[in-house]
Image (tube, rainbow, N blue to C red; front, side, top):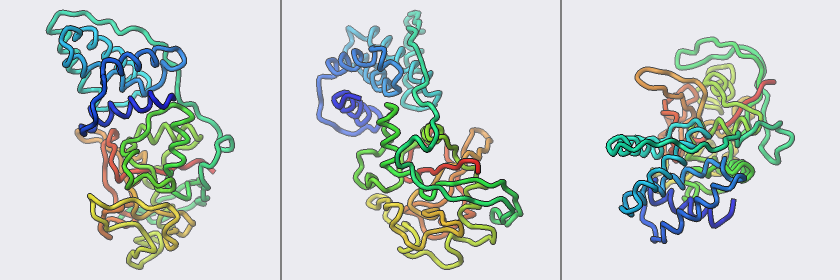
Amino acid sequence: MDEQIRALNEYVYVKYVDGMRVEDIDEEAACAQLHSYFSQPANANDPECVYLGILAFELGYEVEEKQVPYFQMAKRWLDHHRVLTGEEWDAVDDRLVDLDEFFEEHGIEVQSEAIAAEPTVAPVVVEEIEDHGPMMLIPAGTFLFGERKDEINLAPYYIDKYPVRNREYEAFCRATGYRFPKYWNDKRFRHPDAPVVGVSFADAQKYSRWVGKQLPSEEQWEKASRGVDGRPFPWGEDQATDEHACFGQDAAEGATAPVDAHPKSPSPYGVCEMAGNVWEWTVTAETDTETVHVIKGGCYNDPQPLLRSDMRLEAVPKDKFENIGFRCVKSA
């Protein structure tokens, strides 16, 4: 993607999604530039078009005499982003609700202009991708799962030795044109070998499919972390130290660490960083009033009890937090 277009997308994200103060630019000119870029056939299927939709929506309130055409432009590109990604995102969904109410209130019929949509992320075999990290074999058999230590039997599988790092996720974004994650410009989380954060469940799935892998189930994640003997931590019974994990930091000032920074982190299978640093998405889902996914592992600002391998929290699929990352599995 052109660096100027990327800079405009980041401007829109920071100002209108994160709600942070930025130096103002000529937003009508920026909108025209983004519209020209994403209207080109080669760029029309880039999910980053969402930022054109968001900017057009905001301009509809700022430039009253052009409100209707800007709102029509916003709906076109926000709808298109939803088709491309299949993802729920408040920044898109809330604006579409407002747009639909506006058009209904003013009796305006809007037909979203058809935009050719082709998949922007296609699976490829791991061997064709440079530096997506080593995987460790988890053999078939039973292990003790959860706080109750139930016996669970799993088929063999491979799991990433480390959580997906910033350098690997950046390669995915640059190769596919996919949007960069939230917090990408926060220096606390930007070390190339630190786990990527600020990714939703859908983001993690898209990366996993692109490298020919999947996200782990809660059971797969936990067996890789604690082995077969029901140990509380990947390394055993000992309490965590700075050699074991990244944890216990201040939430506002703390930071993630490179994935190879803790020599005592490996599990019985040699899988690293499964306690602390970042919580990790799993495909295990539960539904009550809404669907949530189990996350595992604890993070850089958690106390020691949350680092236990049997600990589990839940996250809404669209959550993009600075303390959630992921790793992948594939069949053996």
